[in-house]
Length: 427
Image (tube, rainbow, N blue to C red; front, side, top):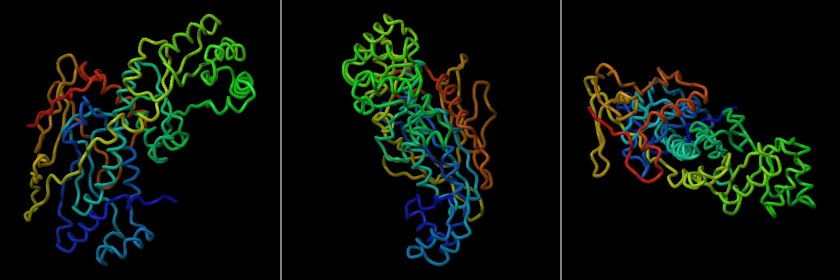
């Protein structure tokens, strides 16, 4: 049975619906916008992730009998009656999953009645803030890896459901696989995994452990060679699996120096095709530092699932337009100090120079002008009239991210703190 997502929200959203129903304003047409006032400090671009999860969650956002029973002490009769027959019936446009973005980008525009749109705030923000933070960190890591595969392996460092979402977001941003089997089942993310130190310690000798693993998984497996003495383990691994051993994994010590020594030893033993994978609390900076080392792949855990220092994108969801007494949509905007925003329903485009490099995010209100020669629209339909129209395979988002990131200026490849590489032009 599908579990309702309607209670993955804050109480005040339903309290506002109750008050608006009583005031006669709940049916006013409104536009809400999901955006970030700034990128996380020092980051040069953001990555949209979680769109597919949002669409799934939106379809499950219903008030079933169990949900209504829980809400009964909190809401009045008319509100409960309204919710009992409620389903989202508005429109949603947004940046497609995998797209890069900058400060002020209108990542999602939700249009419907106030009662329709306001209840989605927490659900949308919780998914986008988490998944986009993970994807932004993953994008920096895969860029630093320079084409060498990255494996997501952070499940034991976060909430069990966050681990599945993180694996999905990392795959969008270029990770090759995940250790989390649930991400494979739910989202089709390729999975990988062989053994841990416990498997070696289980056996009487390291050779016994290697023989058992090779017998079970074949010579193409990855053998963990730093439980005891690395050099001896490499010799034993090749003796057991032969020169066609798939890979060895290093999980401790000076990874660069150890990888160089292991590479030399493998080559001397004739295992020239055996790959070297490294793990051990890597982040994008550690990956970049290993660029010159003979490393063939990276396993990343803690730093990925925590956003590598930025576990949220600080995205917000704000009312930017609402219908007046005459039925005309009017811009509205919060003007609190430090939290100013621009009212009105937005359109957004990316502008390029003559060489095809992205240079600006052009954001405006009202009717959009004709598309320029070096521009493309960024907002695509996701939900129309309450029906999901923007669902796509996860690999489409992954391919989009690779294209979108490749369009960015060269400064996007810098891992040092810096300003966003795309400026926001408001027209």
